[in-house]
Amino acid sequence: MNPAAWGVIGALVGAIASIAITWIANRHAVTLQRQAVVDERKERHRDFQRKTLIELQDTLHEYHHVITKAYFEDLKSYVKGEIWGRSLLSNEVNDGCLSTGRRTVILMERLSNDELRSHVKELHLLLGETTRVSNKSEAEAKLGEATRKATKVHEELGEELRCQYEHS
Image 1 (cartoon, one colour):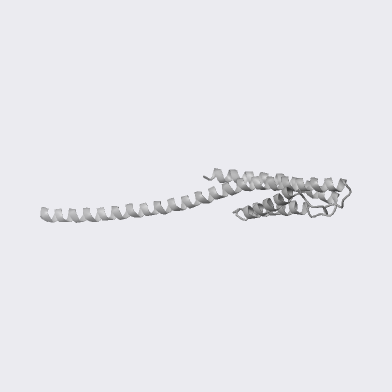
Image 2 (tube, rainbow, N blue to C red):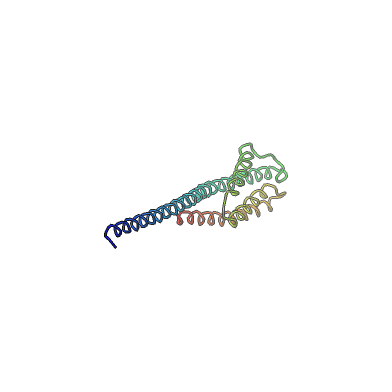
């Protein structure tokens, strides 16, 4: 074969190789771009969960605190001779119970961990029951049970929060 034919064949092979390399590089770039989008979406989810967990920890603590205040207001009325749980709570405590209870429900529904959400829900219900009992001993028992449950739930929240940071 003459050198001109070899030149044409070489140019053709070079062009095909160049096209193949460009195609492979573009395909690789698209794969990397897709992975970057997936990674960014996962990081946004982890960030959302971290913020939710931190806010839920604070809200649960506040809810527990205001429920304890309600217990002491009931105790104060009971000592004065009133029937347990029949006296009105102060506006501050009543509003606190309503707002922090509602905020807890909103935040717990944002949790992606089903088991943790279930434990938070149990604590939320237990804290609410503390204000609806009809006698002092039941209220003390419910508040004690809620305090023990709160300790466990806060540990679980902390563990979940650490997991969200470890997977970053």
